Length: 135
Image 1 (cartoon, helix red, strand yellow):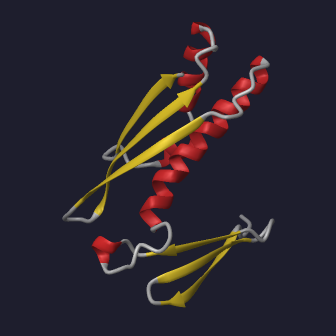
Image 2 (cartoon, one colour):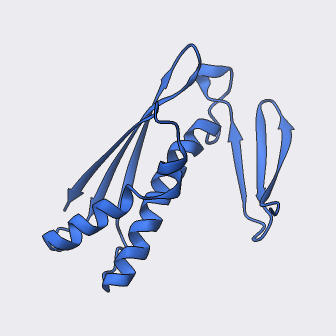
């Protein structure tokens, strides 16, 4: 197993996450409702965003296999927290894709989204809602 990232605590509930292969950096802050300032993604925001990015990536792979271009597609992400224990209870993903996709392609891409490794790695207690919109 190889190291993929390092995390540097920079103070005041902030972290810098460094991707070792690319050098890319993401900063985090605690959310306002948990002693932070909300100045960056919170770790739980990243969890929800990771689910969305993973689903879109798997859809993109499948779309490429089908000769379909998903450029311009987007996902709007919502996250609901629970208490005792504090955890992400629900993530809602609203996918916005081209209305020009035919029914078979839509079904294939929607099925692919649910197979992403992040979705399969999260607790069964986490409600994952995927809604697909074609515009």
